[in-house]
Length: 435
Image (cartoon, rainbow, N blue to C red):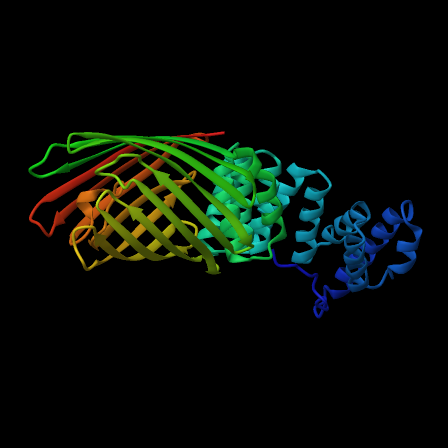
């Protein structure tokens, strides 16, 4: 939040009432000195009774020294003037809140916003006080209104994360804290909050059902169970097991992934999966990837994957850009190139694919996403029928909804028109449990 400084000058009186106003201010100063004399006689000696400006400077100095009660006495005296300065009233409201007089502080901020409805610091101050009072709905409404007028503001995003945290939603809080850091990488409060909340939600279990319906063929079905953990803020791992029935074969695939943050903005990932004796799934797959934050809200992903099928080897590279446009919108673009070598052919087959997606984040870490793709893109597990000269045009939708902070559902659907004249519908249903 921007630091608010008291006004360096005070308007002079030029009317017939000037003498009376000066008399009232003189009386105000005498009250302030009297209030301070029982606590800090040096303050009374240093605050000239004929200088509002000197009294404001002394109040600011007391704030800097963290002598909040003494500063509060001064601001109460300054605000008692018939025409108090707006910034004196603002600091009175702040100090009332900082010293625990929350109801009083809320009333003072409401009065300030009646005079200046768009004042950023007063709006932030009111949201803070309502959060401290436990009025989370009111605080969230204040902050969401601020987010609309100040999109991408790190302080607003951090406070929205605090609302999520106090309501027992560490995942939602983590998302906002990350957004605050993308807006301001040096935001110390958001960084400290991440260290605090990430351990609270370090485990995630997932169950997923998925199916494919290829025209002219029997439907395929499969399921995956996974477990993900974050033992530290910079390390995470995931283990998964899949059973798939396709083309009259039942195959099992097991493996996992590990990700480690190398630098503050760079993460390295590895993956290994095996499916012994498989004919449809790759018998082995190995991957390595890098994620790097280029700037606030923009992330670059670069992945390499090797797929070892029973009669073919596939090398695939797939860079991807992901952009967070404000706290709600997510845009993504991906390109993939695959080189497939068949054991029965001398030359490898090259294949290009690309996809774009747009997602809307809402509520507590919920997401609606739409995408389109062209080329050899696969939307389920890699399979033997989807390599080589395969290409398609596809559109799809995805939806993720957390019914509680710890329990979420996911739905997925994609429709493909393939180059061989067939059509394929892919769909999935997932359940996520966090703790």
